Amino acid sequence: MVKFVVVDDDTKEIEYVSSLIHEITDNAKILKFSKITQELKNEINNVDEHKVYILDIELANKVSGITIAKMIREVDWVSEIIFITNHDKMFESAYRNVYGVFSFLEKFHEFDKRFKRDVKAILKRNFDNQMFKYNANNVELNVFYRAILYITRDTEERKLVIVTPTNKYKVSMTIKEIMEHLDKRFVQCHRSCIVNKDHVEVKNYKEGYFILDNGEKVYLLSKMNKKLMENE
Image 1 (cartoon, rainbow, N blue to C red):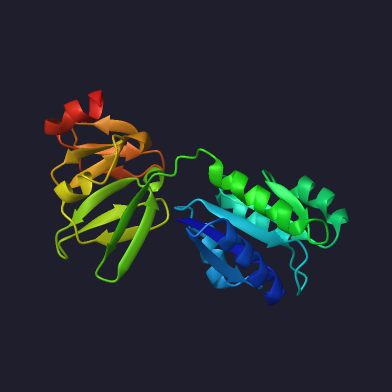
Image 2 (image 1 turned 120 degrees about the vertical axis):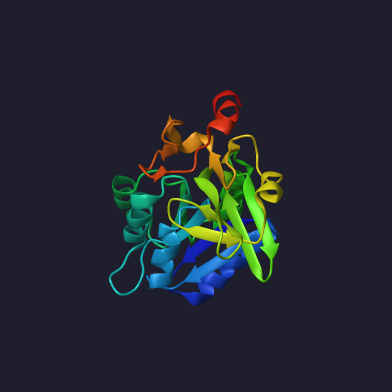
């Protein structure tokens, strides 16, 4: 499922853009905002998912889509950004201030056609979009493999904790069960821990810890699993 974040101070425009997205794909989750809210800030800071942001450049209350795009790029260099506007003179300012904009679309110039073309192009891109998907006990979770640092067991709740740079998610699974849903970048490094090798920078088997690329040191490394860590 692809997550779209639509920001426009005109609710009719939001609904129209949403309808175009649904015409392109039935595998979309659309979040709608008419202004900067704490919920929108939280969404921007959650970089566990690849998203498509569709931002109106000119918003009410002296806030611009450019401001929101700069907030996105402070934490997220992967998600796509599409600007829409009624005034093409805003494009130059956006280009100067925001890195990695996918496209700019004028609302008055073949908008439907160009919007559908750009979204289809984004959906066809070959990103590392493999995800861990979990749906049980009224909990629905979709997390990119690349975002997972490690997975460990919570002995008190008897659940697994999936750790990412920004969040921790609990699922009712065993180590053996979750390993069946992961790819080769994940190895069991301890009887109660699975690690994403792509994020490991230091391994100390003598002291029983590994250090991740975010600097976190985790004391869940077993000598018994050294072969898996070194050779796969």
